[in-house]
Length: 369
Image 1 (tube, rainbow, N blue to C red):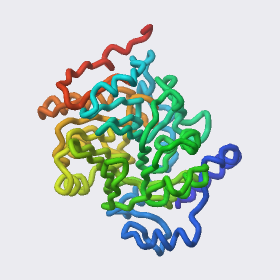
Image 2 (cartoon, rainbow, N blue to C red):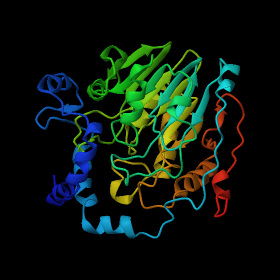
Image 3 (cartoon, one colour):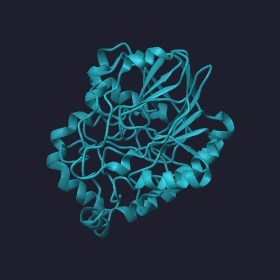
């Protein structure tokens, strides 16, 4: 780890200590022995790795320098919307009206509710801020619903352990609920620490599958990293997900850079009815772990999917680009290629099986409402 990263972490230490309950502990020796059975775990370094880990490691030397920090905090981009984003208070009773259809309700960023084969799958639920401290990753606006307002869900699906995808408060809320957690290898220990019964946690390595609630969940590769106690500890695995029922096939990228895994996933599991692909919080210096809009379009084509749903945008500013640049760019690119783009408002019910009209609601976000 570069010296400048260590110094930055040292400066954060006093504040970090105040939020240590959400960190999760380090893996035990016994857990490391179990992880060592994974082809994605490098025993000599005691961490999970990507296919091209050396390139990702080299990226960090570029990311963590004074110049890039200065650019992030002094850029002139409109990183936050000038007015509240339009939203719809979900009417969950509508889910009961289309038992056989595939429905989605997006809550902003990468958090959404998937209604598939009359089962509810809550994906990367996040109802607070996207960081361990109150001043980091602040939401653009209050969540359209809270966890308490959601109907009973059958499965909670997690892509990786970052704070903008795995929220401690929400996990603890569901600790006493009758719900199953499906997570990448290593995240189970965090959930158990937060009070969740180990019997309700299913951990999967890449390419492993599990049949749960009449659905088949398959963990697939992504190119990213993990860590809650520092930067890129990589002591838990990150994953993308295939969710398949007897009628529908869904793909969620989690966080990922573009790489060869998208074509492999498309070949093994496609075609998909819809692909939820990361599209936001990107930067030239972090392209080894995040996708630009053009990368998401290429990933979509590799996957052999019918509809493209961009996620990882629309609720937080975690990179120095305009808040609506991701959706503007991918809208233009999708239109040029004849790709069916779906981008409902926050909280709006999307029936994937029905014809969809794209309403470019982000163009109407102006000061004064």
